[in-house]
Image (cartoon, rainbow over the protein chains, first blue to last red):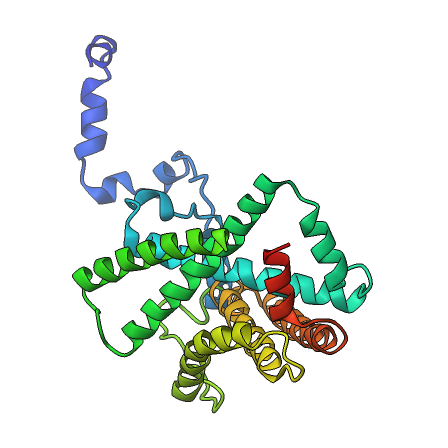
Length: 178
Length: 125
């Protein structure tokens, strides 16, 4: 500020700034003003959509699982899907293996292999098979009762959820001990 | 690739009606799921019988149940709306796989001991 005053430009700048528009806009003056460096481009609406969609793809996705408190409601839901998928993958895997290599995956071979496993591996593997089976079965029944319109409340969801967990635990132990 | 068809202000299109989807499809899924419970119990009780009809029925039901489950995964995570090439490709791969699995289970149930008996024997091996 004091700079302009010492040089004596203060009054000249003030005059240029506050002078009426026509005076500032004289053609001779305009050529002195630096041209804007930003270029605009005219686009068709479709091209605009393409740019918009490209931007959407580059958008960061917001965190979903990690921002929620782990709760019986949604954990039970995703575990139902995971256990069901696991059991189905086992069925599909075995059936395809038998289809393409019937002698390798014959019942005699599988039983012989299972019998040769150490006792603790048998217990672990039975648990890995029994727990998802029990959970998916009981939770499936829970879903079927929901489909009839019963227990469709927060309290109902929790009560049936804990019932499923209890039944799963008991059944898993019983199946492993079988 | 279009995430939004038209502009952002256009409504989404309504899916075309199909007889194999909707309420009948839904009821069939529930009936199948509910049926699996007595079927599984019956299959283990009658396991080892000379006419393994229930074992075969259980195998078929489990395959259809699994197919519906896998299909639900594809619809949820690899929908053709978002994956125009991969979505249909995986759907057809699933259909082919399910057919092959059906043949595999049929072979195992006719030439070997059958699914239920296999589980029963491996469990006590």
